[in-house]
Amino acid sequence: MNPQNYLQTQWFDLMEALEIDPTQSQVYFDQLCVHYNEKHRAYHNLHHIQELFQLLSPFDEEMEQSLLVYLAVFYHDIIYNAKRKDNELKSAELAVEVMQKIGLKKQDQQYVYDLILATKNHQAPFDDEGLFYLLDADIAILGSASTKYKQYSQAIRQEYKHVPSILYRFGRKKVLKHLANKTPFFYTTTFRDQFEDQAKKNLAWELSTL
Image (cartoon, rainbow, N blue to C red):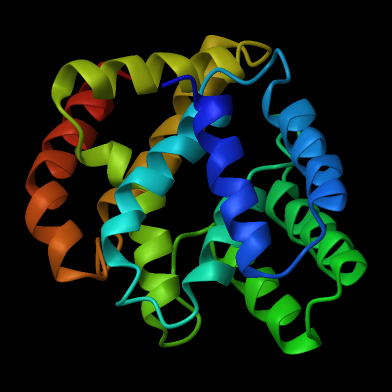
């Protein structure tokens, strides 16, 4: 299914569950699409958001605040510019602006804000199943089949096409080594069992190419 069509269904189901007016919901869905359809996005786009929903949907019961986790999924990459270092912060701030306008409680706003900020380094700053599943799903691409992983690595390079090769290799190595040394690599048993071994193989392969 086309990612935008798929996500439109997910978005309106989420907004209905949060008791948000459909007209207001459409405004914010259109805003999401404008951002995620930006031309410079080769990976951090609607397809990425769709994959996160598909990965997380089997674990609704495990995530105590699943509605808020899904809201974080929608907004965690809404601001994305490879030339900036504050994308997660700006994404979290925009999410709070929207949550204020649709009338979510402050504690819910804070939870979503914290979830989004945690996706910067993929380290959990607090103990929460929703956070664990979000962080795991966001890096599950690392444990994909080798062909898909190569497409992912090429897409990331495309997003950083403004960076000279020598500088890109240096920066990418730093990111990959950070991920390779991440402890725990995946927080949840399900993601660990399904993706961790392949993720380590993929990271080793890409590091060997840089």
